[in-house]
Image (cartoon, rainbow, N blue to C red):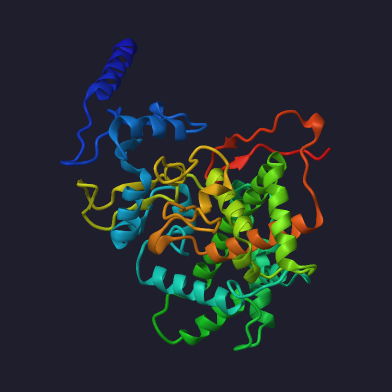
Length: 419
């Protein structure tokens, strides 16, 4: 009897694998999925980017996959990504509600929240507050002002080492005491109308809307701050590491950067963010580091908010959409040297800095990264200040530099060791 039950179970399982999963009408093409598993067995769990490139060559810049039982559309190339995230941005501004992070954040905050009035209010508040605290204005590096403003605006950054992975930050969701202690201290020590940082500004906003129907509350505030910390630490630290490694392995690039810095600063020891306009080559190098490193290879997964179109295909409401940003950053026809590190990708024939349309390391459209301005400023001041004071050399005993990337939500280089 037991054997019969086992055989019946195996038969049903095999039958489910051979029953064809039907895609919706005029849905993007893709490989045939298995029931339950979808196309997961056809993707390398360590680094699926090569598999996505293979499928793109087979099915085109827009193709579909099944992640388990969930249909997903992968967008590749500048044209497809801009059509979705820029031209039809509101149609593609939804977020998933069935993954681990969305359950943890309960759809609140900004990063994993759906496009609605709460999302718009919180994004507007955050952008305005960061600007009011000087992020995006002229900052200098001589007295640490720019770094202090970053940490004063987001004091919770002091809780997290910059080199830790995002997974470490998620542990604070199960051990939230230090974080919530900071919020509690702010409530007890702040003076209404005299904000010291973003948390005080949020508490002021809560007071203004206390008598009405407001989306500003303790839970939203906690999620927003956590998102800013998680999104702005691992990414920028990995880009810094990538910049140093590429400068060490391209000494002629490093020397040219240093020469330009000396010519522009003319003996000054401090550097201003405004100096970037006179440092055309340095800007090209920093942008090239971001392009070749594609720190965020797959932008945060989107979901269609309504039935919509993409490159002639029909996508039903609720379809998961995956923007493959790495495909744009290395797209042939968009770059002079798409597959190698070369600052000439950002220089015109006159040697002037230009930013191609395909430069999308921060994604695009209404969901573009909140910290783009801060990241650009920090990278510029960080690189220029270090090149003023040090020369970076790859040790002769260090072997061949490993420039390969470890895939993840945030891509990073293999760890470097100090000799």
